[in-house]
Amino acid sequence: MASTQQKSQTIQPNDFDAVVIGAGFSGLYMLHRLREAGFSTRVYEAAPDVGGIWFANRYPGARCDSESIIYNYMFSEELYQEWTWSSRYPEQKEILSYLQYVADKFELRRDIQFNTRIMAAHYDEQTNRWKLQTEDGTRITAKYFITGVGNLSSSNIPKFTGLDSFEGAWYHTGHWPHEKVEFKGKRVGVIGTGSSGIQSIPVIAEEADHLFVFQRTPGYSTPAKNHPYDPEFIRQTKANYSEIKRQTRESTAGYLHKLMNDRSALEDDPDVRQREYQKTWDRGGFGFGRTYNDLLLNPSSNETAAEFIRSKISETVRDPKVAELLKPTYYYAAKRPVLDTNYYETYNRENVTLVDVKSAPIAEITPRGLKTTEAEYELDIIVFATGYDGMTGPLFKIDIRGRDGISLKEKWAGGPETRTYLGLTNAGFPNMFMITGPESPSALSNLPVSIEQHVEWIGDCLEYLREHGIETIEAKAEAEEAWSKHCREVAESTLFTKTDSWYNGANIEGKPRGFLIYVGGVGHYRKICDEVAAKGYEGFTLLSLSSRETIS
Image (cartoon, rainbow, N blue to C red; front, side, top):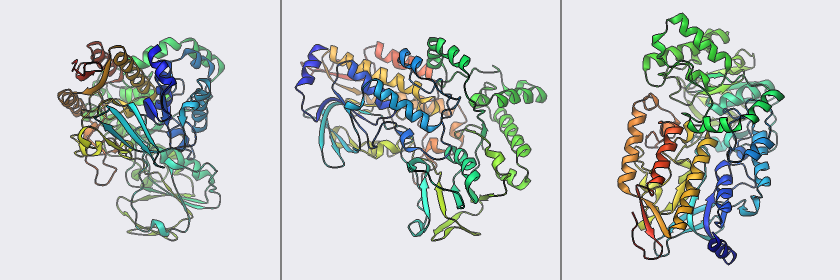
């Protein structure tokens, strides 16, 4: 460590041991971890402050759908004891304040360059270093290149004809202005009923003169049951820090939800099953999906959960025609399930109209509003709750090129043929690491848990390389192929691959389909990664610094 620290004192301003892209949950912890280990590290962030998606996602009603007591870092018990969340599901402002607090506590800002977008990262085979370039042309070099760009940071705005002609204001939920958007007295159209739409629609409806919701595909939403935390609960939680950390890291998805019934939904009589679903419904949160052990494995079991939610929609929405439009018909949770506060109740308001754009698609945006194939709607404001180009989209915003000048975009052009090793690395891209990359648990987990696991694995790996005089580490093509095959096989055993969703790129026109999330479980995945490291980084080629010989 001493030699690295000595090197850091004479390093050039734009030459680092490691460069990290993004200053959200991933980038902040990666910076702290590497800096503590003595690596000169610089984080580049396009926004003017820390926060990542929580800096940009300021739309009305924006909240996390992981419970706050686990949607935070666990690497520091001191940090866990210092910070106190106000409610079960934290809103955007509180999460951003938390990340700002972390940045201040660990003095991270001095090694973060804000308002800087990395446009290109090319691997130089002559020097075994990454050469990066910013939007203003500044050049940077680094031994290690680490992406912490998130899975959902590349907004998807459909290419509607006439958008440039719209005379009102329009916004995307993923890039919301910092100043308050005034909806009072306005005719507002929200396009999309995914997570951001379901969160924002009830809030906008309370203020708008009239709200039109343009829905193509209804989603399954269960109640969040958000509530303020009482002091005794907070005290117990902080006292249980070690156990909470252990449970989330060993769990299936990084949550504390326990399987309510370790049996098939079909093993219970209908009246018993109804009572079990009602219990988890009343508790709120994602625990509903853990009522039985086969809801994402058995179509018939899944239908029992789906029908329960449809029955709740019928109970809540007074207009039977509207209720029918709101009922999904695909497999429950095969698309991203959503938590809500008064979402279905909102359709009982006189100032809310649901428009089915599956039967009558949007034809164009007009100067005065929006036109479907059946009608025209006069609007003052349009809100695009149309989601993101997930998983690969944020990485494709950077021109990443490895050996022989091959770009990551070219390598992954096949969609289903997208390959990684452990969701962390790529063959042909030495010394490059991805935090929550494709084919890791990523978006199907409580992300801080997965982020910490990746950051710690990468940090340990770089220390191993330094201690053993290793110049480069690169995934072997055969290891990459085997891992990708395993990921596909596990996914195919579930219902995830039987439904179109952003999980497999179906929401992006022209994007190749491929399910790029590891569904084998957070705890199991951690064990696999640890075993790879324990075997001297099995599946990687390590090149010695001194002799340039291949170690493995």
